[in-house]
Amino acid sequence: MAGFLDRAKEQAQRGLTQGKQKLDDVQAQRAGGDLLKRLGAAYYAERRGTGSPEATQVALQALESHIAAHGDGFLHA
Image (cartoon, rainbow, N blue to C red):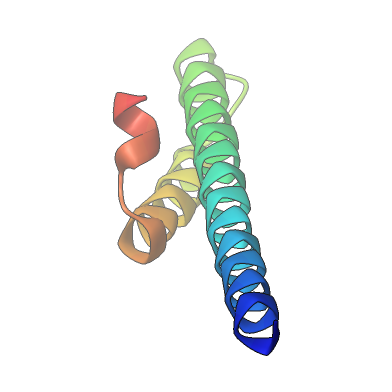
């Protein structure tokens, strides 16, 4: 009986770990999408004359930092 409980506990722990990883991936993709949207808005504002090149550069740098940390999978999803 103890072996069964140990296996069940191990399987539950593995499921929790996989679930947390999936949640982290989804959150990273969502954050990447938000950063991409901000970059687009900054670029659009710059082109219309209501934004600045600095704001576009800040948005681009934030996006590049996110890609360096989490990859660019959200660009392909």
